[in-house]
Image (cartoon, rainbow, N blue to C red; front, side, top):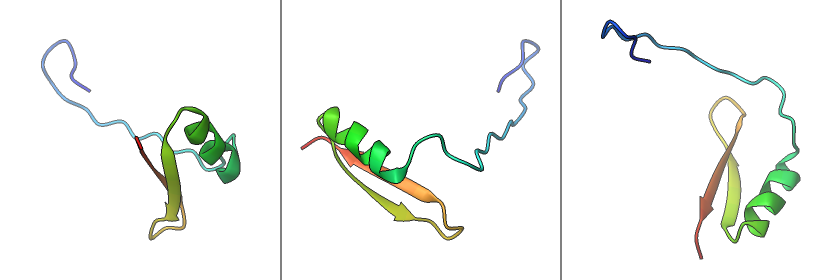
Length: 53
């Protein structure tokens, strides 16, 4: 984030527990007209990939 004085700082936001299940996310993407899939990253977290058909 850039501050008013021009300096820059980094803020990390990490969610340990998700609000929605994987299936709920995939259904939401489908309802939005997107083809979606999920893969686990090297730390075991879901990464969602969604594309327009």
